[in-house]
Structures are given as structure tokens and as C-alpha cells.
Length: 322
Image (tube, rainbow, N blue to C red; front, top):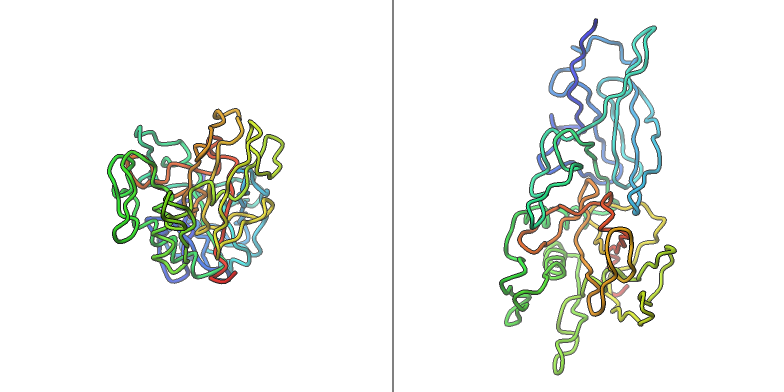
């Protein structure tokens, strides 16, 4: 029996391993599908032709596009990332005269800061669960992603205390601050988020967008976009200049802002009343998780595969004046 060294890694061309916070690159950048990790390709005991690679892209609703074969073969295969999105990967080895064996690209450890306020971690974030790699269209997405990931574990945006929105203006204690987190980190990265909400009765356009504004549209139980909640009320949504809603058919990308509003009851939650509709907002990570400010810490508990955070809606930055 031939024992194969299995240490599947998806990495940048000039590196030897996946970064601790996951791999995300700009479209057309080369990544390496590596079957035996730090060991040289020359040490692999089978010929290159026995190893094929496939990828699978996640959709906005948490389903997948289906496995497609990557051109080429070998235990170290270069891939020039022609399409932006969030992908799983696997290797298929077919020894001469043997049966094909599949090896999934999986997490080598639990995802950091993936617990919610109850310290619950989903199985999809545990060691051995499928891992992903991300590909983006634009540099601003990498900048936003860098800012939010560097804040994982932070308690600054916790629900109980206050936090400063901008000089002299503070968010109230005991209110969610996920929208303030997104406002800060996108602006820090140069993806400008304007003030669009009113601090009534005197201060108009003086507060950041709410999560319901990032959601853009309510999605009813027939998957239709609308601005009416389950009770027939008009949902007041503010436009966010410089940002545009992404079509539901478009594949999600890391660095985009992602939001969900509970305006319609689903199998996972009850519809919530105005004004926020139990909505939540964060930034999409390389692996389909949201990096978001929870009630206690900034974490990546939410995921596109988690029914409680569907239906998800996305916005992307298109620049000031658009």
C-alpha cells in the first residue's frame, strides 16, 4: 500500500503556506494548489498526471455553483484566478489502475475569533471543515478586508458601552454597533461611507447608515426584492452614495459589505418590527464568513451557509459621485 503525504495548501506563488487569516488575492494573481505542503514537488511519489484539481464557488444564498476542473495537473499546480469569488478546492488522485481518491482543502485549525456572544462556534469553522480561498476584483476590497480582519476580537464595538462615531458624537450604550464598525473600517480603507441617517430632531444626515440601509432591499419569502415588510409597512431605507447593491445572481466577493434584515419570518427566525428589523451588517471574509461587530466582540461567527443570516444582500463601493 502506497502512503501519500497529504498536506493540501492553497497559497501565493512566493509563499510556502496559507496565511493564518486565510488566503485572498486580486483577480489574475497566481495561486498554487499544493498537495504535499512544504515538501518539494519532486518528492511526491506519483506522476503529475495522476493529480487533478477542482474548485467550487459559493453563491450569495449559500449554495454552490458546482465542482469544475482546473486546467493542468500535478501536486503543485499554478492557477491564475481568472474569476473573482469565494472558492473551495479539492485534489483528485487516480493512481495507475486504481480508483480516484478525493482530498478536500480543509482548515488546519479552528478559525480564529469565530465564536458568537454565547461562545458558540459553528462546525464549519472547526479544524477539518472545508476551507476556502478568496479572489477580489479591486484593491479597495483587500484594503477593507485588511482593516476588518485586524479588528477581530476587538471589544470596542461591543453593545453595552458607548463608542465614538466621530469627534464629539457617540453611539449610545446597549445598542448594536455593527453599522459603526463597517462605517469606520470602510472609511479607514478609503472606501468612503457617508453619513445618511438623522439624529433627530436637530441633526440631519449626521449618523452612519444602519444595517437595513446596507441591506438595500427587503427580500420576501418568495425571494422577491421589495420595500414592504411582512406586516405591509413601508421599510424606510436610505441610499448610500458611492455604494451600489449587487444583483442576487452575482457571486459574492470578499471585501463587500453584507447585510441581512429580518423583515419576513423564515425557518430560522421570526420577523422583527421596525426600525432595524433585527438587521445585521458586516464585511465578507475570504471564506464566506462575515466579519462583524457582535454584542461582545468583533467576530466571524456569521456565514453564508448559516440559515439565520440568510437572505444576505451585498453592496460594493463604486466611488464618490456614483
